[in-house]
Image (tube, rainbow, N blue to C red):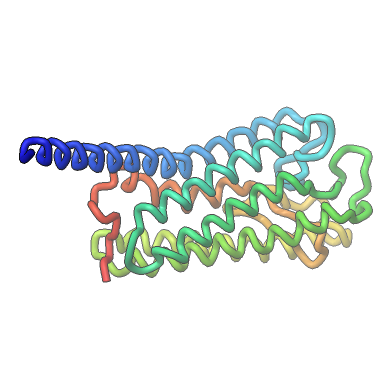
Length: 261
């Protein structure tokens, strides 16, 4: 009888260990998606921009690549990156079980991931002369409006996530460098949003034709006209996620919590 009970207890412990190992592997894969998604997004965006006739990476929005016969490539790019970012947010929550930003950090990044998916489903309207043959200010559609408004929510959540995560990092001496990095990234997201608003408005009004609307150090988002949208989304996402996940892939702390409270 005692031997049977010991065998059962041993089997239960082994099962629990196996379950923990499986969860650890899944978490690592989810976190890895946070590095792969943005990198893949930028590579596809740059290749598409360089090979698409009539498109200028300097002048046109990255979202404009969702238009035309080859638009399905950028649409897929948005959705895949969004799904991988959403997975990263889930993995982040599994690592951050407790402590500062353990809830709101993953939630905000999840909102960002969902926003990328929405950007792929609801494509932007033609703008700034792309696709070729369209006017600078074409007619506004429902899906184009949703795309523009979604950009505000998407990059707003990304900027806030940077500041939220900076608070967590600042509480641990080993992570304080990442706190500054997160703050700088969040500020760049906000500044790029404002810059895109001003530059695209000046372009459409004829004050600054051929403006560098499409190339920025961080994502660009809609201006005064709700049809405007964003470009190079993965650069900002990559700036945020790659420095967060490079240590968590190892899950070097048992509780995943650099600042327990």
